[in-house]
Length: 295
Image (cartoon, rainbow, N blue to C red; front, side, top):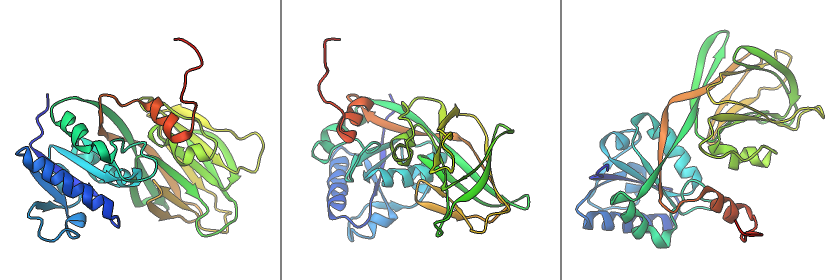
């Protein structure tokens, strides 16, 4: 069993309830004789707290566990910052959906206590690395846990691009763009675009066209280690963008190439032992809550 001695706390900004839960967690952890490290951004909103402070990936390098208090967006940001450190991450939900932050505020001490005592499961989620090249030279890089989305940017016109998978040409498409989603992101933007739900442990990617200018274009599921390349057509009159998790945006120009592949390091996401992906889907997506017959 991994022993957690120093715990990092990251909280979503702009929420009084998040600060209250972070303070509650800090007192709870301190009461168990554990070290507490506050993320610098949330620490600045809690003057006089007296805890150690760190920011960015440093908090992942000095802690045995990081607890994120907020919504799924908060955990997405933390995942990108912490993935290279290998530190396990636990989510407390103070947002809306809670697909990733699955501990409810009213049970935070009980569930976190269970995790500290070794009663948890480890869910390894892969991320995507994105490299943008212009005239063959890299100009930008980014990481995503949910998805990478090619979209028109500020314009409302269709964009034209080529899709290559593992060096093989797939198609030239005119559309509003393309969603490249991990299994983690299949419950997010990809789902809204008509993509399939993917069990989180699947080693696969789904490519979902956005309003394609053809009736035959459908989502494609490919092996998780596939290298994807998007080539922005030289004929585009607008400048599209590539967005990662809806939180990072890179402006593109006609002729740019976007390479997407699996990140070597994975996110170690911890869950309480009673975590159930399908129960989460029932609760968040409005599925039937009662089985229709005996099993």
